[in-house]
Image (cartoon, rainbow, N blue to C red; front, side):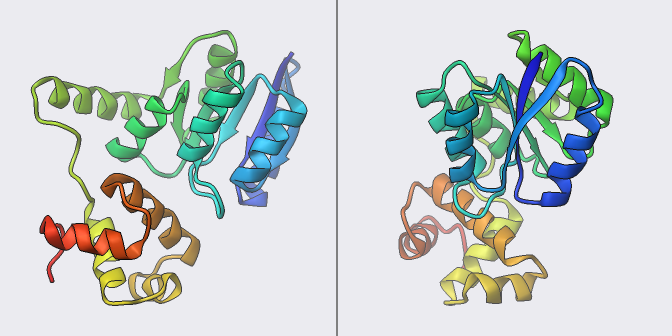
Length: 212
């Protein structure tokens, strides 16, 4: 029996996954979590075999959760299931210990296969993710470094941060949910290796990543 923990801040996503996966005789949903911190507590409590993990959560993003799991619960294997498929995020997730990476458009059979392969000790990444991962690695081998520092969306968000807008105001300006802005802001901080908005803006201006 493969014991699974579902981590996603959308209740409807967790319920849908639980309903579909619960029909499989070799799978057991042992718990659900809606935040990164709750995920870590649930992992400690339930000791699942596999965690299906979203990257965008309100308190602790998925890559940070992955790093904690790798350090504190090395026997637990994690599959990322997210709407985000940028090369940067894929690289970060793999480096943090993800054994699988699926986009939320994946079909049920693909999710089931990933769960079984990863639980058996393997790794599985859907074709599009594998293509982006290999492309990024090839560029790095050629000495071209990591993918672009900031995506167009991230530069737009950082430009508005530089103008002093709050996450809520940025969301309204860019037609995004506030929590999505917060998620992208966390990624920006990680990419720029900074701790807060002021440091992010200062580095971005210094390195001409955004216009003054």
